[in-house]
Image (cartoon, rainbow, N blue to C red; front, side):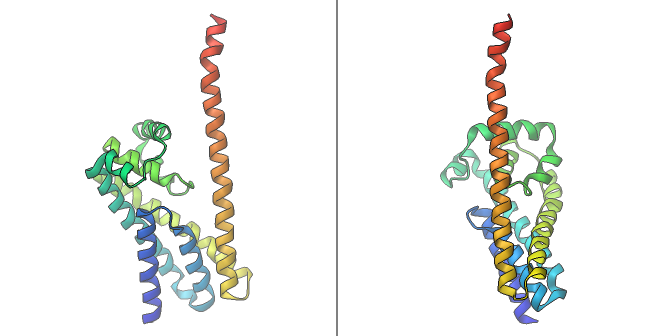
Length: 202
């Protein structure tokens, strides 16, 4: 039991750290832990989801607090703020629909950091962020744990399930990132063509 608690504690710390330092693959950590739990201790799968959600929530709170107090200057120094044009669009969406944007931000690869930064810079209240981010983190952890369970149930060895879960996550993330960038390019092209079209008709 002590070993399982230690594993869950490490998972929480890794996910929390990865939420603050976005280069850490937190989703893969949750999926790998779920795949491992499926083979060795199936009764701990719910605790894996809880630990992943708690780590994500804690990391988001720390990052949000740092952005609220440090502002855009700190975000640039820590290299969280890279695409200011995209950030402007996220700010506009947050001003229109705060809670829905916060809820889905974690499920979109590369979507969490811009939304979190925009929320801090726009000045969304702590109460709104704390309430909206809780189900977002729980849903995110549940989704990635499910991917890990799928990998663990298909392969007979625990390590095979972990590797399969990580590969699936990488493929899904890359596909969704490509699709998101493609939509952004189409939207930018349509926006650039709109003024010339209206000018030609006038």
